[in-house]
Length: 288
Ligand SMILES: [Zn+2]
Image (cartoon, rainbow, N blue to C red):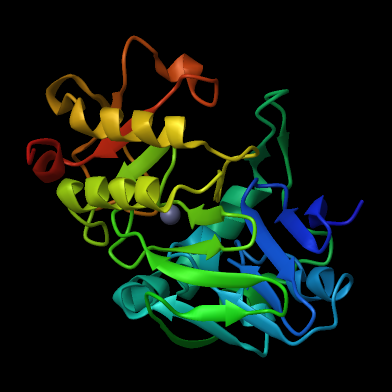
């Protein structure tokens, strides 16, 4: 079985995923193709893309986190990312992060069966991966348009999850590719995130765009505007004092994170319909 799975959404539009369940998007126009995010990049993502298109390739990162950018080094092409996330990108592409990500992937859990498996490809080269670097990065700005030929994709600044988060609006279909900017388990903590008010303005901006579908970087199915309304409620009604303590090894300095779940759901419901949570640190949990 190939390491990267390409699911056809419509003609010349694919969702790409790998065993650790990060989604990347590939849109192919008559002149250019566009790859949105590069995942962890454990496998040969370039070859997976080149199996379905030989068009000149634009590559963009929705934000700088490790699971959206570490595949940049697989490509010779430029990779566009917000300047506001470039420091984050550089940190998350250091060898120490890459070695840690690979170690986690070696012990990937299948969420349906609970079984642990090695989520790395058979030909994984740990030394090459560790020294992969950030790729050929260049600045991505709000309003930049990627004209693929019959498919037009516009960059929309959506800060919150990170200060430099950018979403991509596919104008002909009215679809938004949001990375982690809108999510049912929204991380909003640490030095790289924006404040809660900025995140709420981003949700309002998404509503004003009125996309018919919103594709997230970790969601198998697209979100709707009804989901976005619930993301906003989760942010507005977050009760930090009663939140569930949380930590992540990629941000060990964040010791005051709490999961604030909307309504009467629990962590047992994560991933199920109706589950909406926001993860805040103390400063953001008490800011609104
Ligand atoms: Zn992220």
